[in-house]
Length: 210
Image (cartoon, rainbow, N blue to C red):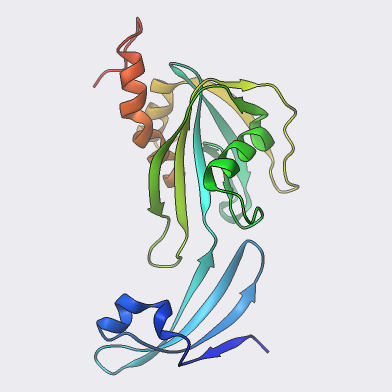
């Protein structure tokens, strides 16, 4: 039997919804793991209709744009089983397997584990954004890492089948425009980092064009 919570201790979980008439009656967990939960809420809508709303509860994740020089970024090419395709991405990882660690610490861990990278420069926060607001409560924490050096042996999970490629940053952006890099979160991370890269590029011999 899936664990269930009844009305009474639930209203505080969705205060904005409750204020506009989304009345939460009960919550059932159809699946639970350390990575994510599949949650089903019984809800009365403002028009009086009663529905089941199912979505993913997620502990959050990090994405890191690893700059190995002022104009070169390390990308990974990873096989992704859900879409059965090779995917160009920036290094990323979930917070659920590392309870108690800050997003910054997880970002450093993921760089070491996925590409063997150690940050010798600054780790810059690019902000936090919802990953898929219609189906999940996952929040992504985006970072830019300067002066990443390949100094340790990657220690990947059994499902992580990937290759590491160093690309000019300009080329990485072009890969998004050509729909060669199709992971939306990685694309967002690259574009969020652009103003910071531009500041550095303006001091170099080959500035990134505005």
